[in-house]
Amino acid sequence: MIEIGRFNELRFVKKTETGLVLTDGEKEVILPYVYAPKEAEPGDNLHVFVYIHSDGRLMATTETPTAMVGEFAFLEVVDLNEQGAFMDMGIGKDVFVPEREQKRPMKVGQKYVVYLYTDERNERITASSRLTDFIEQDMHDLEEGDEVSLLIFDESDLGYSAIINQKYAGLLYHNEVFEDLQPGDVRRGFVKKIREENKIDLSLQVIGFRHILDLKDTLLLELRENGGIINLGDKSSPEDIYNQLKISKKAFKKAIGSLYKERLVIVSDDSVKLAPDPKREIDEMAD
Image (cartoon, rainbow, N blue to C red):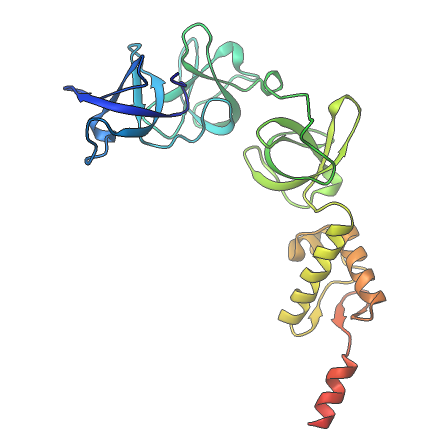
């Protein structure tokens, strides 16, 4: 069965004046010559993205769209009419956003995070900025500490809302984020806590003990690459620490505290230094 708004493997059966005719055995799809592989022969299976043309015909392209049906994406509005907005999908076909599916009135030239789906009435690819209608609530495949992909879609007084793994929604709290995030930004994140009513707290930092182990290695490498010193210490601001190391001050202090206990570093208010290596000094004296 042909999936509209997604890639399909279809068999090339014949040529027409407008393009190649492809089929799944039941329906026929036109692949315009401009998108057709020159070496294609009847009987070949072609990997194509399928959509419905404005005249109602099934059309295909070998171009890769910015997003497909069933996905959240950050798209730009390229045109408006009385019924809604049209957004650029990165191919020769724009996706329509009905006025009723716009959380806020859209403007040409602006970009919005939307969800792509097929309209049940006409099977056309459609988009909506009313994201909560498409976010899954059953998070059986998520656990605290999981690494996830985040798509930022909104900002509130509490923090930044993000789509998790193209399925769920969660929140990055302002006081735990040390960079300026914008809707459409994609980041690696981590599930910090799954609370009641399936609310998810997120972090841009690795969670738990594994985080400290990772940071210890990162800090030791940073020290060795900078002549044995980092100009950050106990009194450094959270912003300075994040700008240089991309970690929170809390995580930084835990990591250097662990390194200090192992007598690997010397910590002051404004710097961290590699501690002298007694074995290395003995070897140097022997030389």
